[in-house]
Length: 225
Image (cartoon, rainbow, N blue to C red; front, top):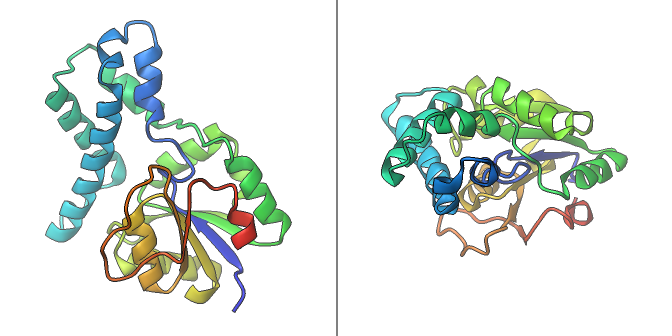
């Protein structure tokens, strides 16, 4: 069955999650952060994902804004960063994440082919709306779906099921795109055709399923769809 719907993860796939740390480090007064901003970006993201999985496993759901704040607090403490206002600055920047350069053209190309497009993310509706608006890509998206509607985080099947519920499509009609290897693998196991955008050149995850395609960025995606 042909692809009718292309669904994207948000953070790390469409939006650059390292941007807040990088921007804060380059701003006036960011000298202390400049030495460790890459560590901060990596630890913040890793802990953010850890907390989603731990909360899902324990049945202790909290929304992604809370998880994002808690993981940032842990990261700042682990790096000994206590500069006044840094936490608020980083969280504010996270609300208006930059999109990767190729994103607008790729989305436009998919829409030009008559495909439905959307986001499926752990982010809250408010966080996602803010990022989409800041990146100026709302006109290229038919839906922005949040795991909050399932009450659990990816890779739970209930989250992937939100796509079919909204678009009325079968899993085999969906091309799912994520920069997270575990997410792309789990989506493939759910029944989507998945694309792993391996921006970091990481090895494949050893999980119960594997993505059908692997790219280094989104540029070739319209040829796959």
